[in-house]
Amino acid sequence: MELTALDQVIAMIRQVEEKLDAIGGSDVRVIRLRTIPGVGPRLAEVVAATLDDPHRFKSRREVAAYAGLVPRQSSRAR
Image (tube, rainbow, N blue to C red; front, side, top):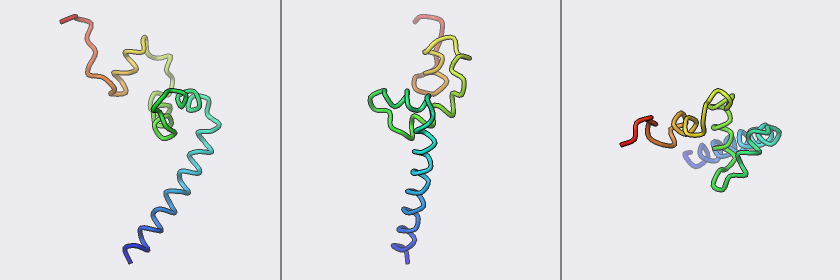
């Protein structure tokens, strides 16, 4: 029974990934993010969805801090 349930879950995941690929394939932000080495389709989709409008940030450092890619940014040098 567990193997049947696993097969069903895998099939559902494939369906969701196909839909995400279709949506991401037409989103300019996702396409651009995927040109970065190491950034796959799901990561590009999450970043595009989370950041929404990148122009609201003053610098790429703010983007990295907001996304949790680096520790907190501080204007004071240590």
